Image (tube, rainbow, N blue to C red; front, side, top):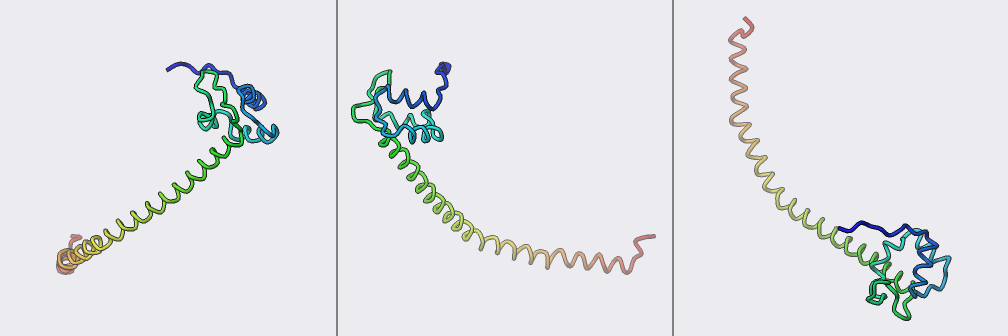
Length: 138
């Protein structure tokens, strides 16, 4: 693996780099506020379709920061929708498993109670009777 040798860039430098690469930015202040919370590193995968296949990562003509941000936000919305759906499926599967196991657990618990009633309780009664007839402390 090659070492990471790119210098850290300030928000202003990130914005300037995007402009030098040909990205159209309509509002520098809004772009800087966006880069402050998202960063160029986080946004870079969303830029790939708008960039030329060259090592300088220049942008194709007509590429705008707004289009990249729109895809970034769409991706976030889609991720939340998918996670919500996955959660619903997970809860439904857990409920199905739980509801399927409950009758088995009830049956096992009933068998344990019967076992206790018919095996353990008589043994305890026998020990109690024996203890009343025999002085165990002597």
